[in-house]
Image 1 (cartoon, rainbow, N blue to C red):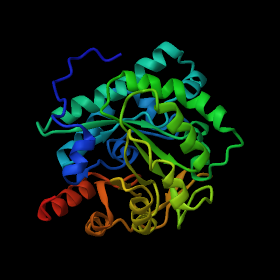
Image 2 (tube, helix red, strand yellow):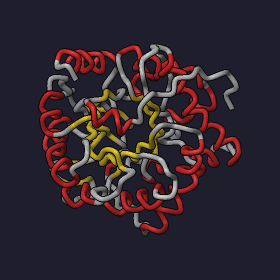
Image 3 (cartoon, rainbow, N blue to C red):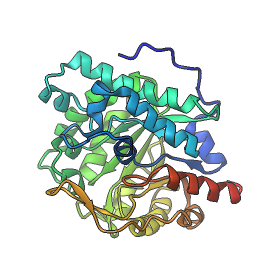
Image 4 (cartoon, rainbow, N blue to C red):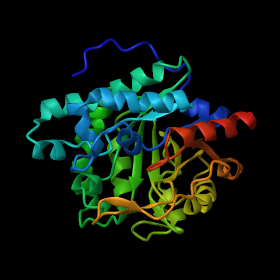
Length: 311
């Protein structure tokens, strides 16, 4: 486990309070920044491998986003699971230490700028553990109860590490969202719920209004929305999320390129446009940023747009 002292970087407000007062800026894609730093991410653990082998690279990537203006840093725990680590010969005690370390790294990076910042512990979908692109399809053939059993130990471990919020992110279908909301109801910690979508439906094909509606009456959900999707799909989803829940909306799409699971690479062209943030805000977005292939320069551009708008 990391032993270096973590600066006192606790935010003065909860993230929920901050969202009630204005727009808060998320970071961008962690993996693309790590690759820009020269890290290889070709194995099944993806960026989570570096929690064990090169944690300084994780912290450096977070720091790049903090310097670009990001106020919320999402941990490198998206693909960090007890099952995935076990396949690499890492036992449960060490795996828990690595997950806690992901929170510590983000906290240290957030302290660099001296600005108020929040740490969001990433709780990725079951499909991320499979490392075969299943998070872009959903419908794993598991019951809600089985998904609860999978998610609970990791969510409890991450919550115990002291993040400001849990990011239930890249969720491909309603069953998994229901399981995640069951898991976190006893943790006493704010969360956001973010689906990966295609068009006007979840990746599994369910209507977005129904998917977002699961969070409507859940007080600990401080924001609901979408991530890891095409920017054009995010535009409409923001409106639906706001109407279905009455909650602040979180939106952080990909660059517009698409992940080729077979070729394990990104294809197509980027369509991420920071100017979209104004439309997202008008539709109800309060937590905005980018996901895969959106880098520090894009986040800096978003920060500039928000600053000029007085957000």
